[in-house]
Each structure stands twice: as C-alpha cells, then as structure tokens.
Image 1 (cartoon, rainbow, N blue to C red):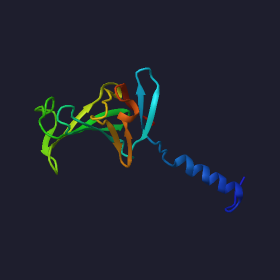
Image 2: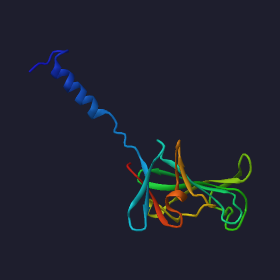
Image 3: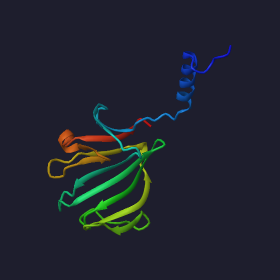
Image 4: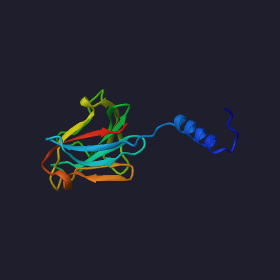
Length: 158
C-alpha cells in the first residue's frame, strides 16, 4: 500500500514515528517519607536533579547546607556550606576542597560521596533549626511539615 503525502493516515504514522524517536523526559521529585513509610510531601527537582538541605546550626544559629545531585539512580553529596567552624563543623582532609564563600563562611566542594540506599535520613529540627529543601525555584519547609520527626528524603521519577 502506498500512502500519499497529506493523507490523514500518513500524518498519523509520521507523528507516531516521531513520538517513538523523541527522548522521554521524566520529571524527578524528592519524596519526604516518614518513619512508617508514609509520603508526607513531594518536591519537584530542578532539571539537573540538584537540591540542597538547609538549616541553622543548633548552637550558633549559623547557616549550614548539604547539596546533592540525583542522577542515574544514585544520590551524591556534592558540597556543603558551613558558616564557621562551630561544634561538629569543619573540613576533613581528603573529603572535598575547602574554599571561602562570598559573604562569609566556606564551601566544601567536590565531596562526591554516594549516599547509602540513595536517600538521606534525618530528624527534622524544631523552629529555630528551620530545616528546608530547595531545588531551583521550588522549596519545602521541612520544619513546618515534620518538626521533631524522623524523615527520609528519597529522589524518585528518574
């Protein structure tokens, strides 16, 4: 059978072929899961799969952040921001490179540590700690959602 250009069937066949050849884009998201396995929230991730967990140090109140990338089924801690060398903070030799941050504090970059189980577990701090997640323009206030509770942050949708 010959299909002439412009016939309805030809357009449908062409559209089907183009759809089959187009890359499939699946949006990633970050699921916030409670200790019982219930999903408390989803946060859409930026196209590159990068997101940061921000909070304030429990003693000094200074800013702290851990930044991750989710790709190919792996979750990797890429870098951390620390406001100073307060209790529990600092750079460990051989674990990334320390550099000053604009406006104060410092970044530890190039950590590139794969997270076991592809997830991050934490007990969400109460008001003063202010845990939050940011990815591109999207943000989620973890403290408002689950203060004092254990949660797991698990990327999905790749």
